[in-house]
Image (cartoon, rainbow, N blue to C red):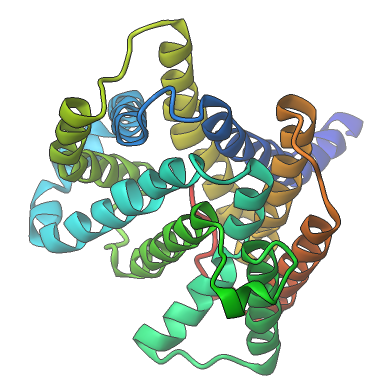
Length: 313
């Protein structure tokens, strides 16, 4: 009998352990991108990351994909759009952003995605937003503004913004648009199947830009750092971490699972300070408090059944 109780306790605890571990792995993507600092061209990195993730997931999804092939063809335009939003526009811009910003900044800005997702849902689908969500979106927006201006609101008057932070914000918006479109995906297509479809469509869209990058800026060099980096972001971040958080969403609901967004910002800052030697300044703390506080308030006021906040970055 004690063994049964212990097993039940472990089953209840497992989703939260996966949330923590998944957030840590996704945070490593931001830190690694900053560490590479262009050593792997951004479009080359995102292209091979997605191909690696798709190849890893195909053996687990091939039967379902074949079974749903007519459904996939029917919704071709939806998957094409989602592929564009998730791969080159969402994740591709993240790697471009880190050529000009810090991992701490990027982690805080990206943590605002749940608030942007809810805002886009209201704008595109006219879904009502209650006062908690409204206040949460405003507060989180203030946090992003604080990061972009580096704690100097006067920068708004002189337009002295960090370009990397603005590119990161664009990536977050595109990622939020991808999240909003998840509701359009037929229920018969599982999360893993959707990931394979999106990764392959997105890689196909990215390919011509990757070729141009290779011609005019340089190819992806084949060495130990490149191979290990692509394997990590392709398998650990794209396939495993997303799976962990998706599993947790189904077990504990989107509201509780959305804590991964706060943890990702905290883990990114911690790893950036320890591994990259970045300075954690006062404006980082204020911005993080605003973003996390705003997302928490917004999450607290969101209907479980309608929310899709987690994005695999």
